[in-house]
Length: 358
Image 1 (spheres, helix red, strand yellow):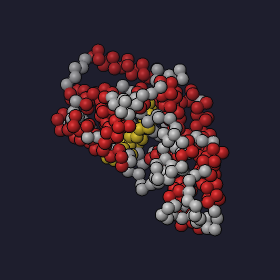
Image 2 (cartoon, rainbow, N blue to C red):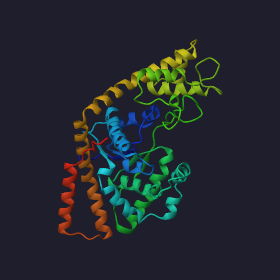
Image 3 (cartoon, rainbow, N blue to C red):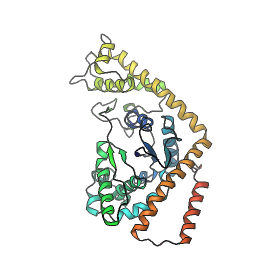
Image 4 (cartoon, one colour):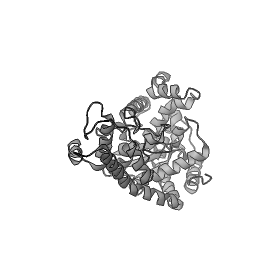
């Protein structure tokens, strides 16, 4: 991505939390490559955010590498976009501390996700869980992002980012671009195959409830064949036919067909035919992604090279913002500190590959 660009800047982060479902694919992953056409994109593997929940070190490293490879497998071009790992760029946490000091306790305590996650992880309500919205703000503001693609549940975080940016701009002068939410077009909400009243989630204890992007074709088809539906007939949306409605949503998302077209295609045919068709379609569309992912995971040298290049590009941009903020705040600077920054940057350039100790 050229540093001097006329395209709006877009920042998006993917938390490396393991299994990605077709809900993640429909809602985000497949859209990333389309965003490259209209925006200068930065895609970040948000492994620092993952620490708010206890992580097994080897699993976190593995999940981070796989999340990186998955973005590329879904079509993100590392030559057009900046794709990097959050924890490898120290500017994120450095700016976060400055933002923390311009963020009010009450603002953080009102964040709905903190309340939700505190209830869900009651045995580990850590300070990182409370302050991670300021890290998210640092992620966005470091790159002077114009847009952040989010769902409605993340809107509050972007609003807080704007509040912090406006406050610091007012006190210290023009520091940050004011980011805007980029909401997806009214899209598909994918529900669990075992219970179409619940959202599909990789954390569901029943693996039949979700379809993973990397599930083999046979597994995908089996899961759709066992999907819960009503005892009636007819492929249409109606009260009491939530299971069929969910399958229609998935089929539409993978084929682009309308409800009317789907109903016409399966007129006079039973649920079994429809489930099989949905399973085969999903598996076939995801086949190139699975193949590309497998190839990338076999080419560690390429992934390391992409990661190093992405980190270097990200740090060039973020260092400008970090330095500007530090100067405005009043942090001491000297010629020796310049050389220290230079040496740190060189170190990161040389040692910016993933830890291979899985």
